[in-house]
Image (cartoon, rainbow, N blue to C red):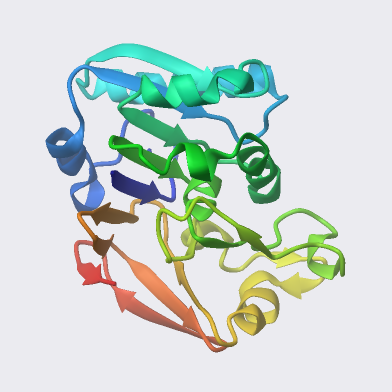
Length: 238
């Protein structure tokens, strides 16, 4: 299995795959031809939204010249066929969305176990990249989550990596949620005894053959402190 865990596939305001940090070139090297893709949703009952974004994502790959033989969606409409759909695919796309909602669906269908012997390519987008971790850090996102004592910030994930990614850092680093600063007041305290990696759009985690590389600009959050560890165009081995 080869994994690309991204913040976002396209630069904001564009309709094309982001070539930054060798992303498209690496996809060309790793993706089989033709592609048989399985787009796994973030919200299993939001069928129209899932189909809409799946169409956009398919367009990104087609416009970049990747031949697509099959492009299917996995959500509540066909979750009983999950095992067969995974076996028939050579590219799995883990959609972006609300991390806990997607995580519940992944657990419901036993996705971690279903992907244990998967030998294709995985592309994670935002929440999908976060849920790819062995133990997921579900950074509070929606109103009320940061102050809800029942909100679970740590969830079992797919186990594709030990790395916890926090996407869209360039866009959310100054956000305030429930009267608290997202990073300084919420995420930094949660990092006590743990390590998170915040990445802006255009950066990604690349995993192949037991090697894990963080490509592009990135920030390490550990024991309450944030420090930049790489710049655009650089690679950090984790």
